[in-house]
Length: 250
Image 1 (cartoon, helix red, strand yellow):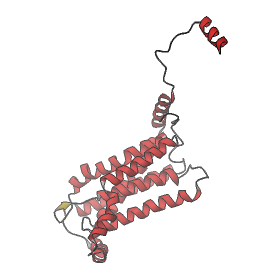
Image 2 (cartoon, helix red, strand yellow; image 1 turned 90 degrees about the vertical axis):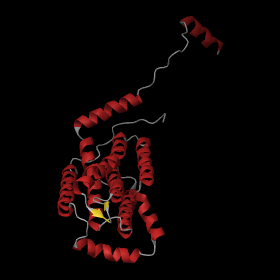
Image 3 (spheres, helix red, strand yellow; image 1 turned 120 degrees about the vertical axis):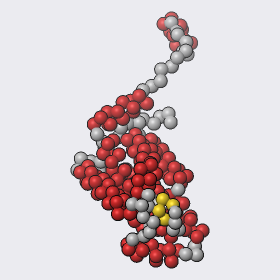
Image 4 (cartoon, rainbow, N blue to C red; image 1 turned 30 degrees about the horizontal axis):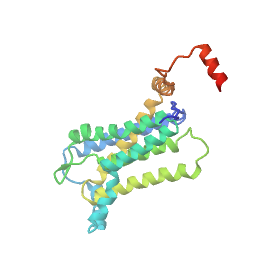
């Protein structure tokens, strides 16, 4: 990675966008908490789940192999590969805060799912704990990261179409994964809604934290340490006379 000049980068969120990010975070947290209370320790679908799940399951029945492929982007290896690609892109463009956001967001979001929400809510589907959907959480976390990095200001005017197409594709991918896990009977519809909320809320929360003055100072120190030239040791010492003689020989 020689030649890459890391810097803290522009703030992830413009000052005008931070209240909106805080509001989105609060709404996501409230939605996850509300659904968690409604479905705690239940093993059945509610009326909304029935209304959405039944046609999806019917539509995708008989296409098990295809549906497994559609759900695959939300599994561990594809998510890790996509996260690594975004981290590398951020480092290549010198955006240390974007790299830190990407590296932290998926582990934090999935950790909330597996370590806190699933044991606490303990909603089951065919005997398996399902709330929230981990596949949906992972993919919508990546989609939210892309939105923060490419769409939400401050952003440069260039990059045009890609700034719209890439986040749109990420959101479509999240929806496809959500439909697939419903079709596979891995999750109820409301599990996927909660998973998306966990992913989006986690990214908003981390972006707000990384834009705090203390976090930006820490990133600035880290980027300076990475950019400082490494002193060379063991270089032969030349006397002024020897240097003059070598210059004359050239």
